[in-house]
Every structure is written in structure tokens, then in C-alpha cells.
Image 1 (cartoon, one colour):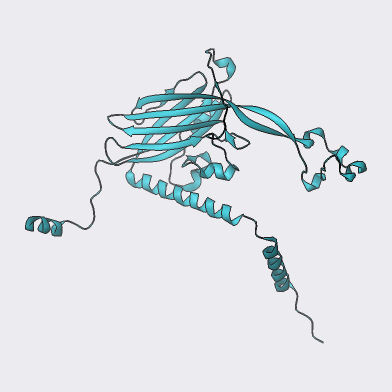
Image 2: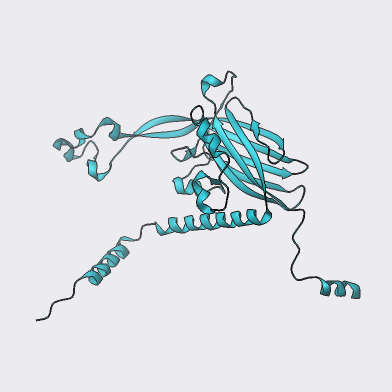
Length: 285
């Protein structure tokens, strides 16, 4: 017991850095092959319930939903090297449809650790992503990667629009007397309806690969192709990028909360107070 206490007293207060920790930037680019470039028949499954399918209220929610750093967030850290897949995306955009081009900083404390990441495509149809996925990376002798994909095909249908932008006039229902004025007839048919989408079919599959860092990997599939690349970085750099990412997500949440409209009575009081403050002083005789 005395030896244990003595050993505890002489231990340094600062914990030494874990020498077994490893850090990487994982780059994943996913795209859809055109129909004419794939001859293999792939069957999609019917979707009967939408309860478990991810949907977002707006684009901001879609960005906040996943811990991604894509080409739109490269400005987070000016010292960070550009996404190496941006050059591939520029070349491939002419022949295929890019669904996602994302980068994650990953830290593995020791051999056998697993890192999980969710992602989805930027393409949204009424809030539904065209592609969703889950990536699991395990650090072993190699980086063992497993990616679960879901690719959706959508049904489209139309619904009437009750009103549009004020600059184009207001659309009322068919019983409204303003229809006789000709205002409704001036609206083009395209502005009378809106296009709605729902997932109708889904293709689910898993891609697995053992990879070495600094090696470009192609994950083949008749419908969804992927490029995968692991870039070794220092643990400090990975922690810094994760911190910046967390701060950015927090700022997005604050901005979203600030954009919520206030109550009418409260907004009226604010306008009245502002008008009083901006009111010029009365002239004295």
C-alpha cells in the first residue's frame, strides 16, 4: 500500500500522450452511374411505410444532421488542405451525378477502435435525401471500412397552391370572388401547382473494403460508385478540426433559433420603440 501511494505521488500531473492513438481524414465521394453505363439488372424494393425514412424540414437541418465537412465548409480552417476529391468531382461531374463528397476527421485511441459516421446526399426531394448511408471504420492491421447505402427512387405528384409570392399576385381558391377579376387567370399553370415527392423504391446494399492509408480505393457497384481515401494526420489536427466542426454546428443552431419569428404583440412593441428612438427631436420656438 505504501509503495502504491508513493508511486501515485511521483506520477506527473500531465497525462502523457497516448502513443497508440492514430488520426485520419476519411474522404468519401459517392455518385450514381448513368443508366447507359450499367448493364447489370438491379432490383429496388417497394417502400410501404415512410416512418423510418430520414426527412428534413429545410436545408439547414440537413446540414446540421450529420458531422460532415464537405466542399462548402472548407473555409472552417484555412490551414486545412483542400478536399483531394474536389478535383475528381470537377472531372466526373460531366459523366455521372455526384451525390456526396464528404470528409471526416477520425481519431482511434488504439487498435480495434471503431468510428461511426452518418451521411446523406445534398440532393433533397421534399426533404428526403436521394442517398443515405452509415460508415463504420475499424482500426486494425488495415482500416476496415463498411458502408451501408440506401438509394431512393421517388414518386412525384402535384398539389394545388393557394398563394404565391406577393410580387406575382395572390391565388385564391375557386370560390373566391377575386377570381372574376382575372387575377387568377393571369397566373400560369406552372404556378398553380407544386411538385411533391415521396420515396417509392429503395436499393439497400453494403460495401466493405480493407484499405491502407494514402491509397485511393474504388468501391464498385452497378448503381452507386464510391471513391474512398484515408489521409494520415496528427491527433492534434484531428481534435482541432472536430472542435471547429462542433463550434460551427453550434453556431448553426443559434442562427436557426434567432431566425424564429417573434410574437406579433412583441414585434409591434419593438417597432413602436424603434420609431420613438428614430423620431427627430421636436423643434423649440
